[in-house]
Image 1 (cartoon, rainbow, N blue to C red):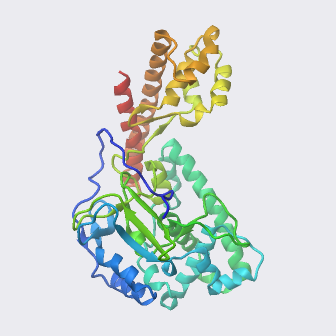
Image 2: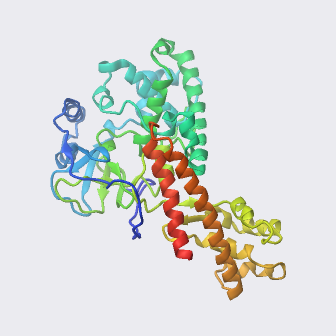
Image 3: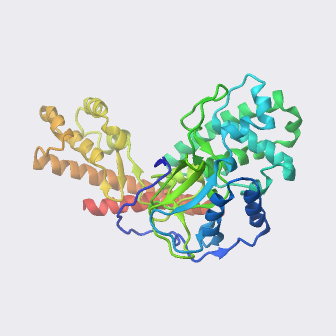
Length: 436
């Protein structure tokens, strides 16, 4: 079994002020709801390896958790190294599932190529149109009907995202728009009978289902597939996709080739009735909001991103020979990690500020700074002064942005927007306190 891209690691972190509610509390069981009774019966009756699935289901229970929503809790104590869930490959929705389906036959008779995510989106749209006649109906009926990613934001709400949030949301929306055109063209040309049944909301739903709920499973190469780094290696795993994310959860996930099951093995302990968490990846709240539609309180992976333009605007008269220094910084690759996080300024950001503080006659010493060598107390002092001014200016901007967000409490996604804006303020306040 592999440690895949959506597995996390634990880090010690300092507590900081945060307006979020606690992550979890006692969960109220929902296993009695008809849709989950039907889901379990369908899963057990649809496979030959019932014993593999049965052990997983007996350990877990669907529950509703305050401040989080629906998730899975354990019925008994779970130890480090336990397999918390195991779903047979036959019950995963993969690209192979699509190619072996009715709509797959239509796709294979044509000439179009799709990314794996586009392919699975088409499949979900078609299966949803079938209603109860779909084999996958018991699973599809448990899925959310809408999501909270930026695809569902109004244009005014997009404007209230942080700078990085807007950039990522714009890229995300462009990717969806391209997929939407591909999918619409396919339906019109190859499955016209579905066109009256499918609108933009249906495509958004299917696309978002895969974006927010898929697991990492390496895509099997196929002549009708285009491998795209953002839209490949995805699969849907019924029941397993009810597991929620926590930044410090430790686990491994992947296909067990011996059992032909997709399994998650935890490296955490859980007591009976605890909610079970997994880690989707080392993602900050901006990434979580854009790709999954939620944020975490006190996320240890949160960062505030600084640009070279931020530094240039900081003190255009005091940073001499800036263009030459930028050339050096880009040559070394230092500009790729200019961030503030829970530990303060990144080493790369502090090193860039030290280079910025060098006088022309000492600029040749930049290689020493790149190697982590302190060249003088004067350089350290000037770099710290630049850092304090930089963080202060960024904090002023972040507070202004938070005030703008707070003026729009009627927004449907107000809490998410507020949380993201508050994260920036919290990180910068913490960083400034370390500098002063």
